[in-house]
Length: 205
Image (tube, rainbow, N blue to C red; front, side, top):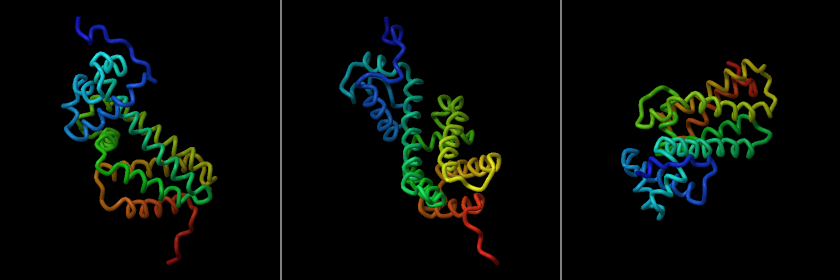
């Protein structure tokens, strides 16, 4: 009987080795590619048995999902932190959030894969991300919407939804294919957001 045939259903919380296994998988993927990630290799890196990896994670598909969830959590954490740094200035919060996300995404294989999946672009993670791409995009927009509404911008919900969708998709596009430094891109997107949100009147011609 193989290890896979007796594979238990892992807890979403996991045990003491779950996070080290996920971290090791992310590092190995970044260094050598997803195809090199095996349960045996992860067991060796973490210093546990292969059965322990199966017990903590489950299948390789479940591992990919756990890795994506981990990276999305980091993405959302820096967004939240950016707005907390600027509680009275929405545009400054957007600027900091965009800059922080793009800096986090620099050379980050998984964040680029997430961004690519939301745009329907093929990546080696696509089989694991296709069914979740819409949910990931929705979650990112929901988090941003909650933050932005806290500043009471002068837009109704429908128009605010359009602005947030535009900003999130623009950021994901820059994650996939940067066109400048994170700081420069953040400045440009914050300028656009300020005018769409009507928080700063445009200069008169």
